[in-house]
Image (cartoon, rainbow over all chains, first blue to last red):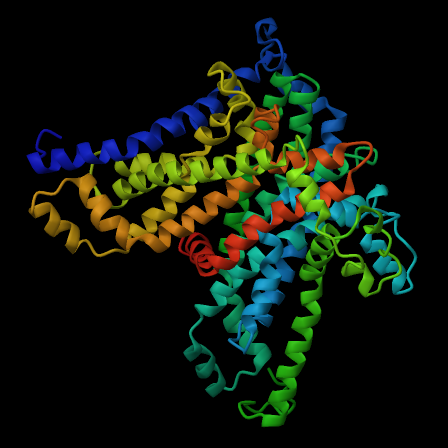
Amino acid sequence: MMGLSRARWREAIAGYTFILPAFILLVAFAFIPLILAGWTSLYNYPLVNPARREFIGVDNYIRAFQDETLRITFVNTIYYALWQIPMQTILALILALLVQKPLKGIGIFRTGYYLPVVISMVVASVLWRIMLDSQNGLINSVIATIGLPRQPLLNSTFQALPVLAMMLSWKWVGFSMLIFLAGLQSISYDLYEAAHIDGANSWQRFWSITLPLLKRPALFVIVTNTINAFKLFTPIYVITQGAPQNSTLVMVFYIFREAFRFNRLGYGSAIAILFTLFLILLAAVQLRVLRSEPA
Amino acid sequence: MTTNEQGQVPFRISEFQKQMLTIGLYLLMSFLLIFPVLPFIWMFGSAFRPVTEIFQYVYPLSWKTFIPVNFTAENFTQLLFAEGSMWPRYIFNSIFVAVTTVVAGGLVNALAAYAFARLRFPGRDLLFLLVLLTIIVPFEAIALPLYQVSRILNWLDTYQVMIVPVLANAFSIFLLRQFFLGIPSELEDAALVDGASRLRIFFQIVVPLSWPAIISTSLITFQASWDAFFWPLIATNSPEVRVIQIAVSNLVGQDATYWDDLFAAVAIAALVPMILFFIFQRYYTVGITTTGLKG
């Protein structure tokens, strides 16, 4: 650093000055809260009366591993993710393959499929809450009109989570589709032509050219879909509040409920930390496994 | 695209077959378009019905299910212009928070992104890594300690609590940095030789060249702010600072739902981002493909 010339010094000072506002904000509103979460998690910490907190060490963590409702919540969250991630990913891939050619009016279809992404999660949730109503809802009206028996949908402990997974796939499939589409459009046409000349049929071409080259976008889609599936909150808050019988209780809603309804900020923080570690671990494992998979 | 019984190279298919395939593709795409688009038609249709008609034609399905029979704009005039209605305030709050976040956040993030892209200073790469680290931690996980920080700052239930903590955004910094890296640096070097300051170079040379990326990040930021629900739900309470998403979700929580208000409010909340989307459509794609694939 001693050897820096005058010009380099000025450049460095400009650099630090430029990043300073962003850095102060990130420290104050990301790094400090992260440390604070760790600290709070070691306390019995009433939300509304912080002065009455008491240090209890790792008791909150021990309690988390013995909490039967939390276990149900965790299983629910995974069950939901196992519905939503494949549903949204496969649908998105199909849609992307359908709209990849620059046919006349293709923009209408691409825009149409993307439309649900544009509206807010609250709007989508309110809309679906009304449409999924078992008596007056549009969905049961459609089901009844085509001659099938009306379904309990959100009133059923078995149907509620898969129905929510369907709704969230509806909401986000356009986003994943666009990622796939960008991947498909980056594939060079020369590759297909070369494969033609080598005698590959369309199925072989799909398997040996399209799919391997879609690996990168697919990786991105699966990892982001997974994280988003685990962070499900707004539809639960707006539509079910965890009902019926805890069957739609999911992690973020549970953390929210512990902290802001049950006044247990310390316990909520401990679960939030465990949950974050789980998400990071999951993303790391996914990146490992999906990257190393032979093409 | 074709079947291949004889194991021949299926490069040639007849014009007729090609046309049939294209027609089939259009039919399939049109059928699939029903799923994303029909709920929107139903939502906007219901917003223009008198309250007694909203659920009258849900079953059996007919054109009346989607198109208002007695068309009226009463729901909107009542929501927006009734004596003492808070809805204009909620809409203003949402727009105010989103626009402020876009402008202030854009400045903070673009400056940092420029420093990370162009300026050389000790520790730059480490600091950039630290910034990227914040992407991994889900906002939901730091929401509880962020609530504590906001309480200490005495910011709960204010505008700034919805703006300042989300200003610095690692995603925006990353996206803008990618774009700045792609701009040739000759112009900047020449200006530097002429003695221009870094700040001046940034505003007079870099910013004018970067409008696509700036618009694209601004749209993403605006939409994230307009859609925000979890954080405003926790951090605010009084009607004076309430944003439209919270107000909409409050409508469904009540025992007796005002369906006329609800549909008008949902329609407005949906319309704002939809209008932006239709105006700036191509910038959305720029942002998505940059973040999704070049990462």
